[in-house]
Length: 244
Image (spheres, rainbow, N blue to C red):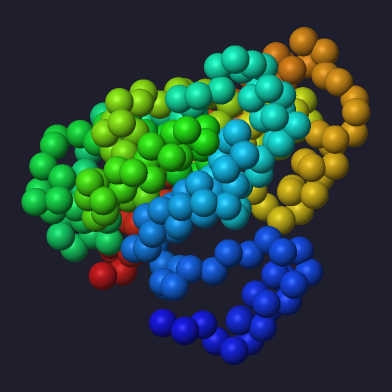
């Protein structure tokens, strides 16, 4: 499906300005996210062979690049077999035919998906990308994109590495020292992004006490935010039920 003329002009403008756009020949829809993952890895393997690591990140996700780079540099000699993020365990396939994420038994008959990194943000090393590139055709595509990567990892005998500094789907309530420590935060609001980026690069270190205190504060406030969203969602669903 071709994009609108206006959208294509904006894409071309961005590409000419920053040379940072890669276009695929498929619709950017929820059903085609696996194709995006495949295209990303194929591009990295073909055109970025000297890159040690590949970061996949959603548009609405904040990434603490200084902290993340420091973590990767400290791996030193252990620069291979890296597939790291917030690891999800024993996730069951969606078997509801009416659901957008439906996965038929013919495509994936197992009770649980293998462990995989949540798709909002994860990192793989170049050697892992090359191995996954080889096995793409052996893996069923009618699964969520992040699950697809996890199945590829299992296929090549790779165990994902968990780091709680990746937030997964969660949005972490903002405070300076917390954001200096974590790697990612999902669903970040537009006003938060420039503030977070400015403060993590301000050169001011947080003490161990400040970091510990604000991490606890972050977790508590994030939990309360999640509870509030769940509670409001329940109220909304109940109102819709009574309206029907």
